[in-house]
Length: 271
Image 1: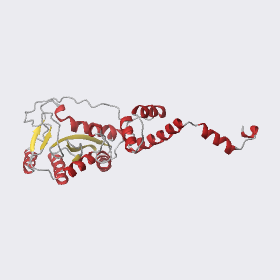
Image 2: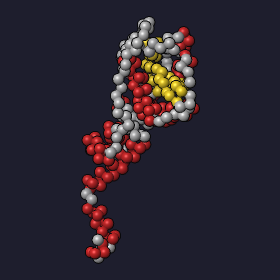
Image 3: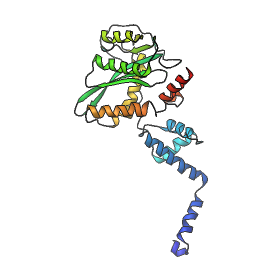
Image 4: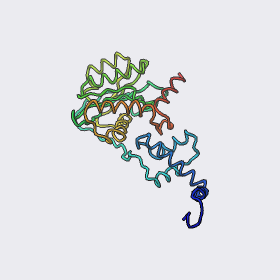
């Protein structure tokens, strides 16, 4: 076309640039930023979190516009399933529930929740992750990973949490009625740390919904996206997810689109 019209190619391409409207240029730049944020989150972020990330970076853009650009570019979050807890079965002795589904807090290290989840590996079969979460910051303050689901697993997770957080006496540690948490060894450890032990009611996972929700997020964003070769590779991946992503980079809508570490840091500064 340039040869027929006897127009230099540089002039032709410059004319094309001028034909792009300011709105089109902004959309193109925003789409590039959306791609970047989506990639950095390993496709875990959907439109709301990408929108908040853009706002933090100084972009004046609406959520609807982000949703529209993501749809046009075919960008979607890998997280699509919702958390729906299931009731447990079996005869279990009831114990004191100090939490009573009151997940409100005023600062960090007031209420912790803990639970165990299963992680599959190709060589070593099922392995087990015990996590302790602070209800104020939603931070995983302690965790332990093992090839066996023993009392030592939950004791190590609790020890790690105490070592990093140094909570004052009176903290509530809430768990389900699993044998690891109802064991004498765990009860002794809780008392030695000056904590108050609390248990979910039988067949009521909503009593411990926050830690159940974290494990559901972990499965959707990390575990179900890969196949772990063995225990060691799974352990490395879980460390990278919890410490490198979830605690320090993953923003939470319930935290005002802040990270758990940001909330903890602000609480410590206010103390």
